[in-house]
Length: 169
Image (tube, rainbow, N blue to C red; front, top):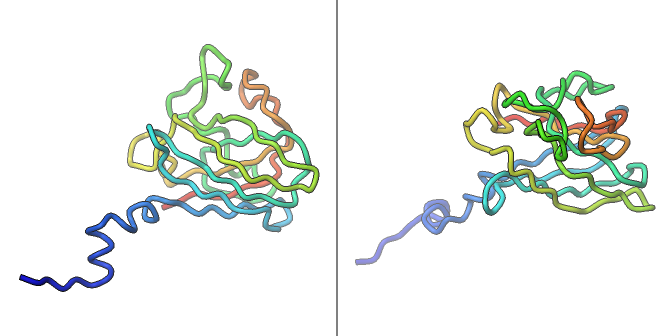
């Protein structure tokens, strides 16, 4: 017996499209509305999410990256609220009472103002749980002017919010 399937049906049966359906493209913009690049968020192997960053036009050096609680990116980006923190923890990967679900490792921008790197956050999901990046209408991905010190509450002394991208379903 021969069966004929459409390309879409065949792709679903073979699992193609599953990754792209679970991948979220986030445009990141500075306070003037200029693009500074993109982040591709997808489920991480072993749990959490993987954030592939492809950035340009940023100040060289180490920068903090956080998920913020509100999916709004109106300059100066205070509209994004504080760090995403559904478990009501203290800030910082090195804080014994933390971290926030939105706390992540720092990344480095090179001398040309670019960065291509991947950050993994095991404390959030892309599902329907309270720690999902889509919970309560979504979150925002925020780049700060300085590195996060990984312990100071509430925001790690990471400085000004310099780029933002809203994350919604």
